[in-house]
Every structure is written in C-alpha cells, then in structure tokens.
Image 1 (tube, rainbow, N blue to C red):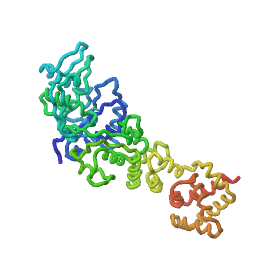
Image 2: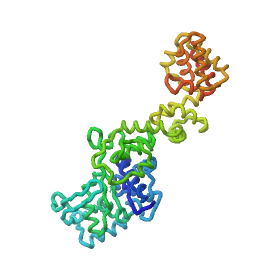
Image 3: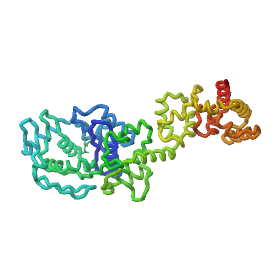
Image 4: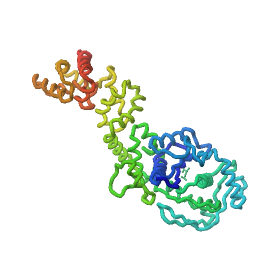
Length: 443
Ligand code: GLU
C-alpha cells in the first residue's frame, strides 16, 4: 500500500533526544507506516549557537535504536532535500523575497524583519484538538512575528513553514506546546498562497505528579535507555501508549499490530502520564518473552564492552539461556555471566566466611566433587539426584552441599539454578572448580 501521506520529524539538535521528541517521531512514523506514506527526517539546525554535532548524532542513534527508519533525510537523501535547514539558505531567501515583494514584511530599526499579521480570527481544525479559533486582532497580545534576525539568521516559524511547503508535508503531527504557534504559521501559509498541511497536536507528557516532564527527569533521555540495556521494542511499545491506546485494555502489543491500528483521530486529547516503573515492567516482560537469539543480539554489545572472552556464540548461547529469566536490564548481563568464562572469577567475601569457612564445608565439597566426577550422566536432573543421594547417604542436609557447591562454581551466593549452571559448565570444569575452591580456602 502506498499513499501520498508525507509526515516528518523535525528536531532541533540542541540537546539529547528526549522521550517527548521520540514519541513525536514515533507517532509520525506510525502514521506513515499505517498509511503507506513517507516519513521524513529534517534537522532544524538554524540556531548555530545551540546546535551540536553530538545532539544530531543522538537523534540518529535514538531513532535507529527505536527502529524508526526514515524514507527521506540524512544518509537517505530524497527528492526534497537538503534535509538540514542550515543547507537551505537559497530556498529561504527566495521565499523571503516573495513575502517582501508582496508587502508582507517590514524591517525594524535594528535590522530584524517582521511578518505583518492580517489581524483576523484564524481557524484551525486540528485532528486531535478539534476546531479552534484564534483571535489575532489585538497586536498587544499577538505581536507581529519576527522571521529574520538582524544578523540574517532565520527564525523557526518561517523556515518550518517554508520547509513543510517545499517538502510537501500533508500532515504535521507535533507536540501541543506548538499549538499556540500554529495560527501564526497558518497566516504564513496564506500569505504564501500555500495549502497548509493537516495539523495534529499531541498531548504533552507529564510526570506522575502532573508536572511537565523536563530534561532533568529520570527516564527523560533516550540515550539512558540505550545505556541501561532496555529492549528497544519495549521502550517503543511503552512510548506508543503515551497518547494512544487500542480499544481493548491491552498494553503489550506487537508493533505490526500497532501500525495496523494506529490512526491520528484515535489520539488522546488528554495529557499522557509518564511512568518509568511501568516502562521498566514492560521491559522485563519483553526480555522474558523474547527469543534467545534476540536476547543474545541485544546482550552482545554489553558483553563485548565488558571485555568478556566468551569464545563463540555457540558457547555463549547456553549461558544466556539460564540468565535470561532473571535479567531485568541488559546492562546486568556481563555481571551475571562473567564467571562462566574465566577461572579467575572472584569470590564474595561474605559467602566465603559464612559458607566455605563453616566447619566441614570443604570436606563435603570434596566428597560431592568425587561423586560428580564418577557420575556418568550430566543433566540437571542427574546432578540434582546425585547431590541429594550424597547428602542422604552421609546424613547431611541438602543445603550443606548446595551452598558450598554454588559458591565454589560461581564465587557467589545467588545466581541461576545451580544444576543448570553446572550443566553448562560441564563436568570437567565443575569438578575442577570445586577442588580448586577446597584447596584455596583450606586454612
Ligand atoms: N524544530 C521544532 C521542534 O523541535 C519542530 C516543530 C514542528 O514539528 O513543527 O520543536
């Protein structure tokens, strides 16, 4: 399916990509994918003093991570470029001269240029906010907008409108914080004799206490989710629910289904409430439910960054299989798996004192090592049966073997299931670790 719908994400690269911006990008992307239209990325970098290369990179990284691919824009090209406002000077000059020639502009004493309002009531039929009439008749409350600075720099309102005309946008889906700008933009469209796009102003994202979400709030930066190892599909699913919801009371919804159902008139009118705990919960659900291959794909950057020599993916896979269930964020993975891949794993001091230094613990560990060495079968079930049989024979409690065994093979008192851990380590390494531990702490 393809259509003539053209929507865009038009960020100003002045900081990092925050949740509000990502949600705006996501809704535009969803609408483009729903309608078979095009999603355009345009970088609004006219404010030279505040724009940075890092901020632009954070936009690419965040969109790529969330899987919001654009059809035209940086790296992609397209028929309506350039897609950086800083490279569109000649286009702006052309439009500026048109407005000037038609008598819509006047120059201030300081050299700034203003656009003369028609002083009318401007009507907006917003796809989310509905029919709104903006009374612009009073110059006191609605002064003429500046479109060009004394230094020749362009003001947002003007270049935003020019680009939406030139890039043939059919819909503008953006945050409600821009609603008050829209009548000014509509006046510019009229003066330029251009048909305006349909507007959809989406509700603000608020903190749970009702305050406006700011850059300093926890969970505000998309980079934070990337660093902490959230699954991108989980964060994307969570963001979809900030202003949109399916009719049924469901929350975990595959993106294909959201794309099929998403439509602009379904967007909520009321503000969305941001709940980091909910996002975290959703991430855990996604991690538990995803395939092992996907879990490995998402974990690999963290494992590699931690410098763990895991050998091959075939060696890594069974280890990840036993830590997957308990992992809440992917940045935990290196710590959870490190001991599998080195004999120089560290021991928790408290566990050593409490368990390994308990009278007789190391002797018991050696007895178990002997039984395991002689054991023909190396499955979790067999390992459990052998441990319990050994304990029963010697009149020990199971835990008198379980605790020292766990600490011996992993160095720590908590972790994945002991029997699965030993299964993955294999007989040779399990027995060797038990003997080495007994020798090391025998004093
Ligand atoms: N550069 C503007 C912003 O980041 C774009 C607003 C719009 O989408 O029209 O807020």
